[in-house]
Amino acid sequence: DKFKDGLSKTRNQFTSKVNDLVARYRKVDEDFFEELEDVLLQADVGFDTVMELMDALRFEVQRKNIKDTAGIQSVISEKLVEIYESGESDSIELNIQESGLTVILLVGVNGVGKTTTIGKLAHKFKSEGKNVLLAAGDTFRAGAIDQLVVWGERVGVEVIRQAEGSDPAAVMYDAIRAAKNRKADILICDTAGRLQNKVNLMKELEKVHRVISREIEGAPHEVLLALDATTGQNALIQAQTFKEATNVTGIVLTKLDGTAKGGIVLAIRSKLKIPVKFVGLGEKMDDLQPFDAEKYVYGLFA
Ligand code: GDP
Image (cartoon, rainbow, N blue to C red; front, top):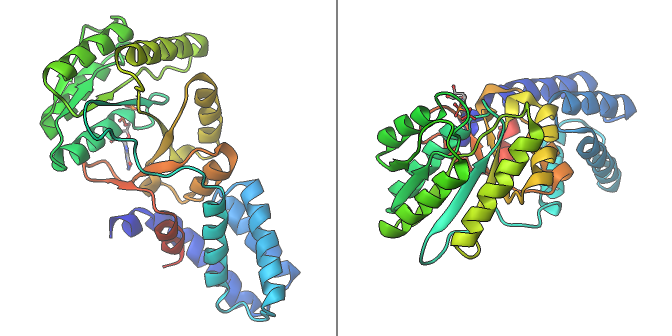
């Protein structure tokens, strides 16, 4: 089970710490709760979510008159799922058009795994029998276009590109025309991710967005923000910035396999109110999984 494997680092640390607590305390008391709180904070679950969870746990323990720490894991999982799902207003399903072109924009800071995610998504759609096209919209970072072309070749989809340094909005314009000509189902667009000049980057994203929506009504249908799970709370700050600049419709949380702080998923949910639609669990093309809250939470203890 890829989902389970990908969470192994988080699980190993989290489960062993919780199990250790359970064994040491045996009885549920205030000290137990306090140590549990620390374990959750260390897993990057996020302060607000941890506080909410602790309240819910205390309430449940009292209500069910739970005295022993044995079995507390299942109560924790239950409450975590409840908290996650209560914050969930939108579906994790992608907004794919029944007919005609669906445009998906990928945004995010350099290095978070944007290009890799585009490759993985292209592979996913292609294996569903869809006609996929990529747009090399990061004309700024040296090598970004070539890197996308490599993914295009690997997956077997065409990449619409212009020279490095050209106007990304012009690339989008070209790509949409090409997509229409080739009757593509899905166009996935890369964008620049330099954060050194935030104002310029945000202006560029706005322009790209504008060109796309002018060419196709209702597009882009998805604006997916790639966030690197290993950067912990920093990811939250990035998300805030992008949320202010563009209409982010979903998050792809990458490199979840590379961190023991997988609790960040829960923090993202409660802080941003944007659904985590996919998680990246490795570097290969099939290492992208739709996010599943129950699988995730129960995977932490399994
Ligand atoms: P970009 O600059 O945002 O386009 O980032 P890249 O797609 O080039 O990815 C940066 C690095 O992260 C590469 O070495 C990728 O192989 C790696 N990477 C991307 N996604 C994942 C993931 O889900 N898990 C792991 N372990 N590595 C990933």
